[in-house]
Image (cartoon, rainbow, N blue to C red; front, side, top):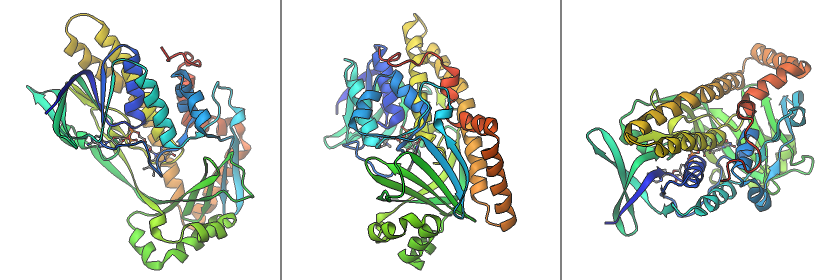
Length: 413
Ligand SMILES: Cc1cc2nc3c(=O)[nH]c(=O)nc-3n(C[C@H](O)[C@H](O)[C@H](O)COP(=O)(O)OP(=O)(O)OC[C@H]3O[C@@H](n4cnc5c(N)ncnc54)[C@H](O)[C@@H]3O)c2cc1C
């Protein structure tokens, strides 16, 4: 058994764990990241980066690397009902340093962050390492144990960061209160080539009664389709056959009719996401703190999950490195820092969750009267530009509104 030691142990090398690793190791702390997968390859995972996430990556100095590896810029958002355009938004209307969302394959994002972290001497990555327990003494977490191909090992650290995502084992181990709130639907994800009628710069939301789909250009020349189905109804859809799925996608997006038939030939070409949000009254206990999806899983609406995971990582690093830098009573200072972290981040996460829940509710409307009211609402938003900008600004620009210090490379040292 090997015992590793570090100032900070991070469980999970997703966007949250790696942004924390970059910022903490640049602050001079020794950081060990423990990740169960061997590579960064993933599919159907957060590829839409909100403008705030783009601004943060620019401040961390990794945006150029990501752009060079390949990403798409989103300039427009369109919402339609039964083929009629109800609302369109142009991100050029926002006067922020980074006004545009981007579509970035998650391996590109993770590789760029890992490369940036690896420039600091104190960074260590342990891959193929599955965390299965916490080391707890007198109520305080002092590290973790994991298994890899060579057997059992441990990491001892002053602070363990749980960044292991929406099905976090660390949350279960922590014994902290946790509530999962199931939403009314699941999403079936699939990919096809981008139809020739569509550009790569427009994010489309298409509704038809209670059916809705997200149609998201995906680097380099594909489209990701997120098709909603009532919660738990995948079995029913499978039973009715792949042709039913083809037809329902074609009803929403006739442009994809042939492509979906050609490229999604069986249900194994799709991936189903169980949609839920989660709440933890406390994101920490002595020696342990949660960030990203582990602390607050969000729904996929408006691409908020990666955004909040990245911001969590950087904000936590700022508070924790300050606590490390002061003299005396380190444990008490760390405990105060992780509590402050939740105080700083929770209002923004709650605002996103509220916005998503309202949007999810609108999507789930199926009755014709409700559908007509929903269409009127989007038409009003389309006509009243200040209102439209305010709502989108709350979704996409909270960080850039709050922090004028996020210039290119400002967090790169
Ligand atoms: C299908 C799908 C589509 C999505 N689309 C979007 C989108 O377009 N935009 C967006 O912003 N968000 C999207 N999300 C959400 C987004 O992916 C997450 O919010 C984001 O990845 C959260 O980052 P994280 O670092 O908190 O967790 P994760 O990205 O989930 O990373 C957790 C890491 O922990 C590792 N891990 C788990 N358990 C252990 C263990 N026991 N030991 C060691 N390592 C462990 C995992 O392997 C993983 O690498 C989507 C999610 C899904 C599932």
